[in-house]
Image 1 (cartoon, rainbow, N blue to C red):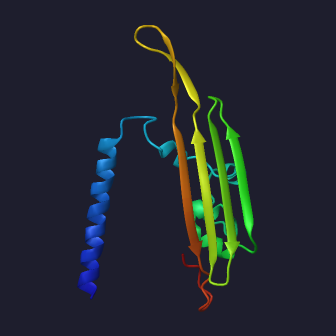
Image 2 (image 1 turned 180 degrees about the horizontal axis):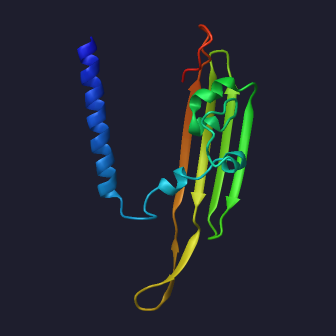
Image 3 (image 1 turned 90 degrees about the vertical axis):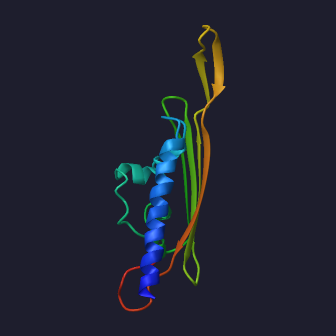
Length: 154
C-alpha cells in the first residue's frame, strides 16, 4: 500500500513538472495569459494587508488564500469589489460564503477587462484592439475539525 502511494505521488510530481514546463513554452509573453487576473487582490482588506492574509480565518476571501479559513465563518457573507485602474482596466470580484451543517462553502467570480487599446500599426494608421478579458470561477469548502482541538481541514 505504501509503495503504491509513493508511486502515485511520484507520478503526480512528474506530471506537474511537465505541465508547468508546457505552460511556459505555450505562453506568448507578457499580457498573453490570465496570470494578471489571478495576481489581483480580491478585496480592499486583503490589499491593505499586503495580501499577507493566509493566517486570517472567518473571512469570505479566505477562499482565494486559505480555504480552510472558511470553516471559521460565523454566518453567510458576501464580498464585492470593483477596481478601476489607471490604464482604464477594470477588475471586479464577487465572493460568497455560507456555513452549512456539513461544512462551509465558498464561491467566487473574478472578472478582469483591459478595455480597448488604441495603437498605431506599422503603416502609421491608428487602430483599436480589444484587450484582455478574463473570467475566473472558484468554488471551495472546508469543514471544522470536530475531533479534539486541532485545526481545520479543507
